[in-house]
Length: 311
Figure 1 (spheres, rainbow, N blue to C red):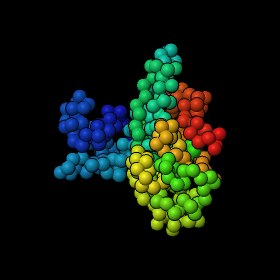
Figure 2: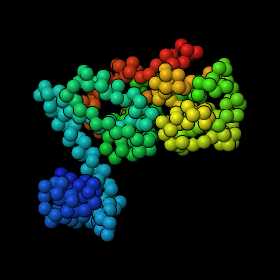
Figure 3: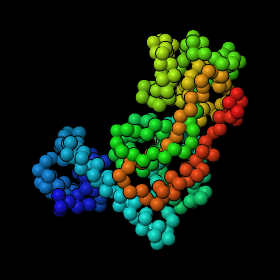
Figure 4: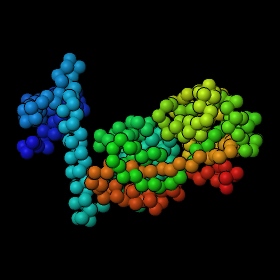
């Protein structure tokens, strides 16, 4: 293990990314035999195969997956070290791999634009995905920071709160419930309720709200896989929906959707900036988290502008 080198680890990363030794060699600027030698040296050192050689390409074994995780962690730490050295030298630049859950994509560009106004030389690469994909990418060091509603518990993380996340029930403006006050759960369950896929944070919050009416909710629910599809369905009069208030600001202002006045709503959750606990944060990441702590909330859509009953 003491003889392990960065070139060996980068060979593992490249073969995993490209699927073949030849393609990995081209990406690294090496010959195929040189990449094969790097992998073989590691396998000899470990006494285990790192790849299964299949007709469809190279596939990581369990030992290979463990090695890849270590390689990604080391690469991230080295990049953070480079940024920190640059910061010490007075060079204020860097890059951040930022992941956001799909609900956060409605405000993430505003956050990034506001941050870059203060830090124009820091580059941010944005990745949008569902909750499970963002957590998986954070776990495998493909992301530096993730914005989400509930921090993962599968591995140690640092989570910084930066703003409230209200969840509301919506309908078309001409829906009979749109003009009512203090709507009860029983009234909602007489309607078709459009919901997100299992595992989404919004779906879990809705199921918690209707916990005593679980069977009734199941009978009334229609599942759709994205916020955009849900909004279009509600505007078309296909039902009501439970959704993040941060995804509907434009449609409410344009009077294409209405927020229903439901008892015990909005449900208020929180937004967090999450990163792996054990990795060293680069100066650019520290600056971004400090920005979220100071100014993040002011760049979120404000519910009181959309929902006068809550003002």
